[in-house]
Amino acid sequence: MSNSPMQAVRGMNDILPDEAGLWLWFEEVVRDWLEGYGYRNIRMPLLEQTALFKRAIGEVTDIVEKEMYSFEDSLNGDQLTLRPEGTASCVRAALQHNLLYNAPQRLWYAGPMFRHERPQKGRYRQFHQIGVEALGFAGPDIDAEQIVMCARLWKRLGIRDVGLQLNSLGDAASRQRHREKLIAYFEQHKDVLDADAQRRLYSNPLRILDSKNPAMQELVNTAPQLMNELEGDAIRHFEAVQSILQRHGIAFEINPRLVRGLDYYNRTVFEWVTTRLGAQGTICAGGRFDGLIGQIGGKPAPACGFAMGIERLLALLQDDGMSPPAAALHVYLVHQGEAADALASGVAETLRDAGLKVALHCGGGSFKAQMKKADGSGAACAVIIGDDEAVAHTATLKPLRGGGEQQRVAVAELPQRIGELIK
Ligand code: ATP
Ligand code: MG
Image (cartoon, rainbow, N blue to C red; front, side):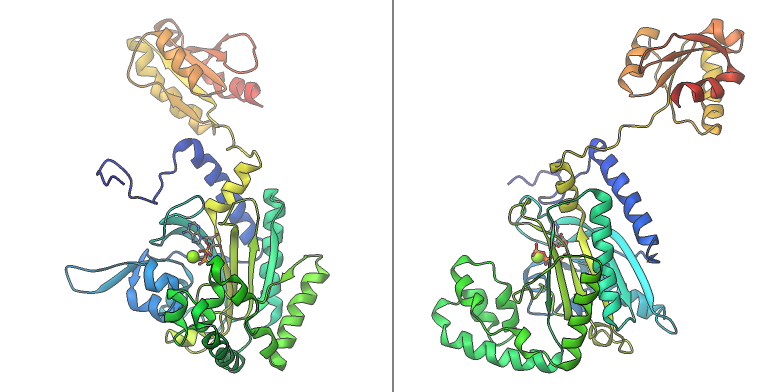
């Protein structure tokens, strides 16, 4: 693989203008949807101290063991990491600025995340997430609300064929009991464990359940289930989440193997999965993380949240034939001659004052060449100013889409006439 300075870093994509339209549209929909549930935006730096992610995500996880872009700051020796996910940074920011002091917080963020994975369709080294975190909320109502809100977004985006998988990871005591049973079980089948699993057997056996290795699937499928270890409160919590979902008519499948790739989860965990993106079918994932805030140094408080992968979501939309909304340029302004050139940029500003989107031709050239640019620009009409027009303070207005005659219009009347043309 080439590492020419003229190529983007492997696994990191440019989003070109033709595609960026879809991103902008998506971001607008998402923002409106989040505001509809009272979530407020927060923006964190892309770089954090490496120790934050180790503490939050867990030392023995794929992310921390092999996916982080970590380096030493050559100026002061700090160990830094490009964020592989947003929850740790969001909680860090909330604690640092005392946001949880007297009220719980519904927060969301969007932006790039970095993981050193093997790039393939739906799996990149820089990818983008929308993250949603409810910090300081204990009840099953908020877990369920977050799932209900996802369902609303899928509907709003016209996404079908996405199913909800649900599990409960219980609380610390049940996880401890389950851990012991898991270790005993895997010890009996050591010959089937791959190298990763062997290494994790005593440090983080739960992670083995997350294995994608086909040779281990049978072993993993018949492993002791955490679900059988749940205690009263956790059971009631999980049942309450399910009954709220049922009330909302949201179908789900309980998947006892769903353990998530990060250590901070407890109780409710969920993933929205489609079969249409090959192996990279999880478009959204999350759950409850009651221990995390205390674990990274805050006054303990319950929380839950989720993140969705924008590339995977947009791939699904594109698979459905969704194309970016057409470019919205209203006017391409063509001008030639000394008087015309002097008038044109002022006219363009006046049209923008009226709320129109205007590309002013720059760089000169013949009328014919400029009209070709106008045609290619996607604008609804061309405004043409030659010296004749300029002297009379007029312009020629020429519709570029859907026919219609060109007409000579006083400059002062242009906004109104263009408005009639594009409505
Ligand atoms: P996977 O099992 O696919 O590796 P994950 O459990 O590591 O996913 P999370 O950390 O839960 O992923 O991130 C939430 C979402 O972000 C995922 O469901 C997915 O949509 C997206 N995502 C995660 N990693 C990548 C990646 N490398 N490239 C593109 N999207 C990703
Ligand atoms: Mg992963």
